[in-house]
Amino acid sequence: MREISLRTRALGGLALAATSALVLAGCASGSTDGGATDSAFAAADCAADSTSDNTFKVGTLLPITGSLAFLGPPEIAGVGLAIADINAAGGVNGSDACLYSTDSGDSSDMSVSTASAEDLIKQKVSVVLGAASSSVSLNVVDSFTEAGIVEISPANTSAALSGYSPFYFRTAPPDTVQGSALGQLITGDGNSKVAFLVFNDSYGTGLRDSTEASIVEAGGTVVYGGTGKGQEFPPAQTTFSSEVTAALATQPDALVVVAFDETKAIIPELVAQGWDMANTYFTDGNTGSFEKDFEAGTLEGAQGTIPGAAPSDELKALLGKYWSDVQGEELTDFSYAAESYDATVLAALAATKGGATTPAAIQENLAAVSGANGGTKCSTYAECVDLIKAGDDIQYQGPSSVGPFNAKNDPSSAFIGIYKYNDVNVPVWASAVEGKS
Image 1 (cartoon, one colour):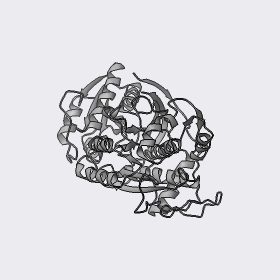
Image 2 (cartoon, one colour; image 1 turned 45 degrees about the vertical axis):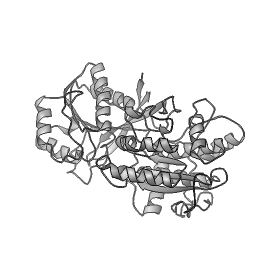
Image 3 (cartoon, rainbow, N blue to C red; image 1 turned 90 degrees about the horizontal axis):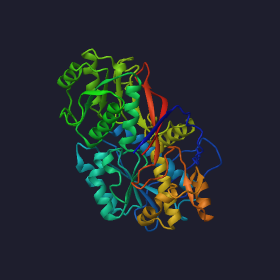
Image 4 (tube, one colour; image 1 turned 180 degrees about the vertical axis):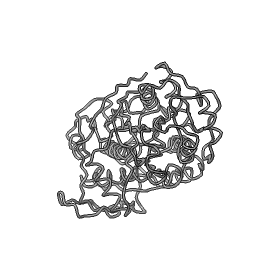
């Protein structure tokens, strides 16, 4: 069952413990001067002899290469900023948190994530943050479960992962929530005949199925690319003339593109065949900036959905400073940054409540610190730790605004952001759909 309510929210102003004056070196203690803005962040890399037995050791399995590499910077920044905040508040059980990073790659080459998962297990991390791709998580989740290591994804949406393992959690809502929201958006815009261009991937077909169900429930019809039609294309395909021709031949009112990097080849084909791009809808796998890819105005009016509340200006500034100081680059995309931040903080709070930085302690207490059993609401790591030490049950409420974990280890509620492309092909947050799974 799912429940969706549509409302516009200004989801800003959430309190964050982040300081702009935090210096982390290796696993050394973080420090703050109380608000100066001229200090730099440094990577909190794990010492060679660190393990989950003596350190809160965060392992990341996030996209550095591959078709989802554009999601790497905001997700990695979210994890890094959370570790900075955790250490500024005294660390976890008296020791500093540290970071061990690996590349997830994408579903076109699973050997990358397989090797990274083996490395993370060998490193005896406390928790794994990732993957971004649902297909990649499905490739590695059994390995982490067998090793008894908790995996928390900030971005997986495939319904196939709901309740998959007692060691698998996510801070992004499943496709049933995003699909329902997207379907309501499409039909609410007055569209009744909808075509899909979707790649044959667990993320693609799963989100297509949920969106189609919502469209049909609202009285609409899927005229191309629907469930059971066999019209999906393989991942990494580079030419789409025949698919676009076939889809447009059905004379749809709206067209939904569910793909990753393939989108950059689909868009010019749609334009070449005369499709009105304002009637196009994207999803979290491709709702990104195309400012440098296409002529200004190409995507003006098109819309897309990304799970998660709109990041506050405060959070954007802190994430941007972190990324600039650590990587020397500007952070332009903030997709799943808040979910990555919250996943890291939740794991640290679970370790605090369990009195140990081991995966077992985190797994046993993760649902509880999310508020699954109720408790006092708190919005920062430091605030929540004080409550835990006082013997209180807590409900952590971070910048992603997700609800407590449910029985399937999914967030019980979450927001789906609706974005509209401006005249320079950049998606701008417009409103949010709140859904419950």
